[in-house]
Length: 264
Image 1 (spheres, rainbow, N blue to C red):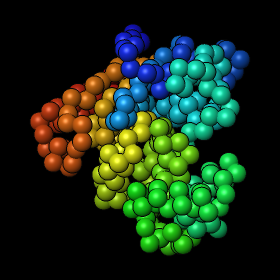
Image 2: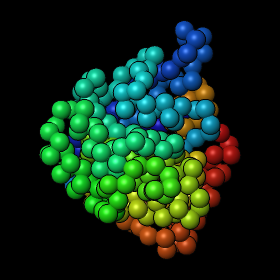
Image 3: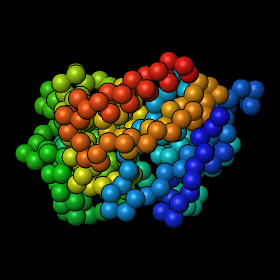
Image 4: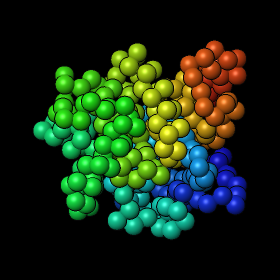
């Protein structure tokens, strides 16, 4: 049974309506009749996580929103109107996406450069975002390993995405290539950025504990032909630190989702 949404008086920021995806002319579907509504919470944003088995279309959902792919059927709406080609939404991938021949500052400012913004203005804006993501002092380094660590390279990608659109940021397994300690640090970093900028973040992850730690809302997708199998409101304090992971409510929710995932 598909998830149903209660459209409140809050403005809609992202809506996916009756979307289906086929790669063989409609003989089979990866995603079928999927609906997703994310409302905009003023002066706060939201943190939404997509969970589900491999191949169910989680990354495809992000690609729809980013404008990197169009569904076979259905439509994508941003702020209540159909998505337009000129809409710009940043996306952070698992693979490091910075250009190694550019400096950190040049990478962060790249989207503004393509918009035609003068160099002085775009560098000023990029430097402000650089400070928000904690990379001050690294602006003139080339965005490559080992000049920057894996976590720092992902901070560059997050800063670049936020500078393109600070209302929405899409993240596709952004910490998947990091070691355990760095991944835990990046989770806390992401919470701190969310507190400062207050965007709506949509994260795809396979890590259930990470999902519960970060999310306001968790959507579990079913196997193909995929739909939303369950919507879980995370009943934990809005802003969290690592101590919440010892909370019985946290532990119980992780266990509940694990059980649900095993039944998909």
